[in-house]
Image (cartoon, rainbow, N blue to C red; front, side, top):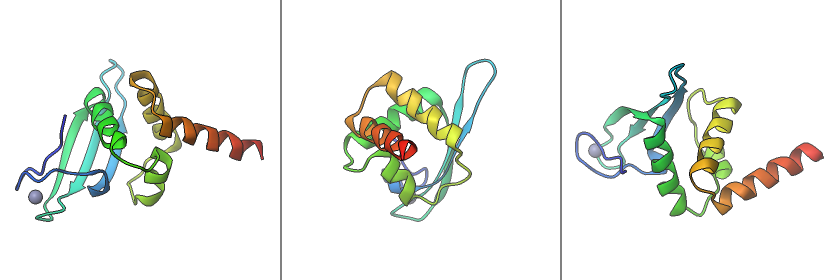
Length: 115
Ligand SMILES: [Zn+2]
């Protein structure tokens, strides 16, 4: 799955997101709302993705990125993303595919808490 600008069709990358919000659903179909600013034409768009599509998208980004999820989140001025949402994101990623970067992040978090 790839996310492209609705106006000019440029690919949207990890750094183009301006807002991410999880919308939990009681019937099990969670959705993720993402807003982006196109790197090419500056169009500000938004999409509502099924969680599975978002997980797949995030994985495809992170597989090509040197940063860990934690590092990426720290550099972003994202919207009201909460710790619980980050945990949900991490759980979803673990279930789908285990990335070394996520394991590193998990280890770093555990070390922080132990100190
Ligand atoms: Zn565009």
